[in-house]
Image (cartoon, rainbow, N blue to C red):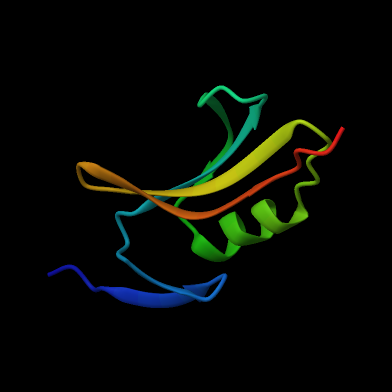
Length: 82
């Protein structure tokens, strides 16, 4: 039996299980392309990595939850000022 856990991240309620994998991704420019920098099954560690990542002008970051066959966007931020 899978245990469902609930956490609040950036004001959103997130439901996840032990098999959920979290990815911190970084992108550049206006293209919808992101590169995974870190991945972890631990939500606390993923949020710490996401919050500790400083993105410069023109860069963007996001925290993605991967569970089963689908992915969900948890948080995102972009710095668009040059």
